Image (cartoon, rainbow, N blue to C red):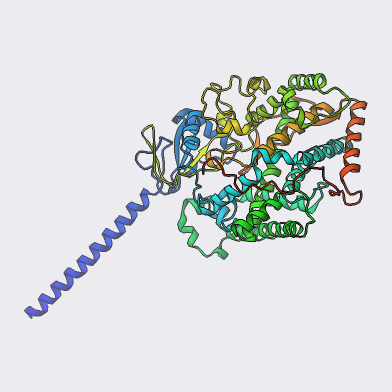
Length: 556
């Protein structure tokens, strides 16, 4: 009997110990779970968090750049949000942006987890969403060897030709001005990259790029996509069970089909001596030197077309809005054009130094209408301390570009469009972005920051200048009632555009109309096939490739 009692006591002790262990484990799990969403000690200040969700319940869906700007006034120019389990650090100071993303660019050169956008929708090959790794560095190095500031000037004839078609398209169907601007922007980049022209808005190749870019930008900011990043455990769920994963994988198939097809077509033309000067010609040389796959090459080329097509056209829509709402600026710009150019010819890129007010229009448009209102998140590779505050490795660090550009301490009366803000600044956008000088702050971060600076910004700036100069030379841009235009209403996802507004584009006079038609006719007769409207002959001296095997970016 004593033995049985002893065994029973041991069994009871074991049961009690097991029960206690289970209780402790469950309690520990609950405590750990309740800590999810809590702001870790040392992070920049921010709004109060809730268990599990952090600040997810506060995240704005309408004009987020304005809401974030208001929070910055309350919590400071460097504040944090907890997006589920992940810290989101917001920057709303020129100095902090320069200190962190530019001066400490080596540490802030990566991206946070972007599972849907990068891994599923881009097979890890879309540079803008890629973490800082060997492949990213290879892409950056190759792009610099082909698209550096000196090299892109070789593509000036492409910009001039597409600009002349845009002007005549505006004469023929002015109500479709947005489509004509999009075609211009896409045609310049497609010629530079692949060597073919986008001759009309209805071109299937243009439509595919527009749709893919729109879908990428939209999908990347959907609530399901954000949740997959906020709670990585969701990434363990079978992909076929989640519609957002199925959409992302379908988008990936469309991307690779479009990008790979175009790349292989361009590569074949280069190898058979049928190509016109283009980026692909340099990319073929780079592939021989470095041995990367056709799949990667297709994304290198495709990313440039995506970015180049959207940035230029979106900024030009903002410029049209500025002209509609600031007719005094339009009149002054036209006075400069009339004095310098006259009425017998169109402006060209060679007029850059002679048109400072138009250059100011370019810079002011980028400040006044930032189409990247919230910069794609950077992510520190290792923990960083700034002014006593912790910025953890892997966190998302976002510049509120709109807030910086509308900061009244940096830009008096910031909602006024005034190109004279830049009358003494003769630097290019790239020079401004990479300068160490703080007396003249960067007026925009639309083209990115640090090592994530857009490598095609030289082309974009020149295309913007040419379009603005020629449209103001040839047309009046008006709206029936400027008061009905909300200049702060930007629509979209990762990239934004002004909300639709009433805009009329009308020729200034009959003589200018004749000049625009004459110059486009001469361009066609001199360079284009009369049937296909593709290049039959390129200008003399235009190199097939701008690839330079010895060119390296400063970061290297």
